[in-house]
Length: 298
Image (cartoon, rainbow, N blue to C red; front, side, top):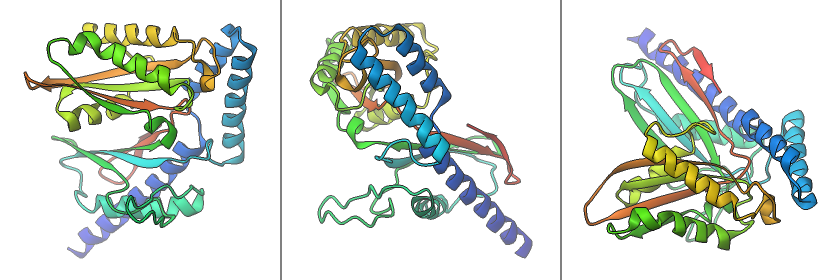
């Protein structure tokens, strides 16, 4: 029994250390795919202002990576997506482990304190507090691994996110127009070029959760359903026609990608959740086996 408890304590410590490292990677290391997309856009861009903005974005990414500091001053609200195998040895205490890792990472990296009490406006400067950080748990049957994805979510892009409650009669026909009109008004607020996560169906809560999860799908990977993939392509093309451009100053690249996830809905409801992500698109993940060894990280 003592050996079992000791093994669980070691496993818990391994998870904590892996989390701190994942938070660090998510904060200071830009995604290679995003850098490539920005560089490709720079080659085809005609607007000098847009070129200047793209160059600044790439320079900022490189500076953060080389100097091991966050690539954006808004280090975001840290979201955690936990995929827990039903046969993984440690099945509890995840909030405690994650909160400890967040507190250490906030001081170590360091991260800006982004958790503010909505009533008192008090900020503990730890990125912790009532119901934060958000943790999304998924149990995987007959698996003995643990995967955790760290997803910092900045405030500027989050402020554009929205839930649409559309009429079932024409919801599918008008949801693209609703999103396009919203982005027109937003302009440079979400720090474009943006990535859009969209959840169609479910209820109000599920549609927004699906929208956030959609952002974790790799860039330029379409939904496996052909009709949904077509909606993604159509909306991406329409948004880039807006010419909002990098940081809202005009140019060809307004949206990097659109990802849609769906759920069955009530016949009387047609919810559409929209989560907007800025160009930095920070995230990192690791997968651990049942011995506490990291078998994959990205």
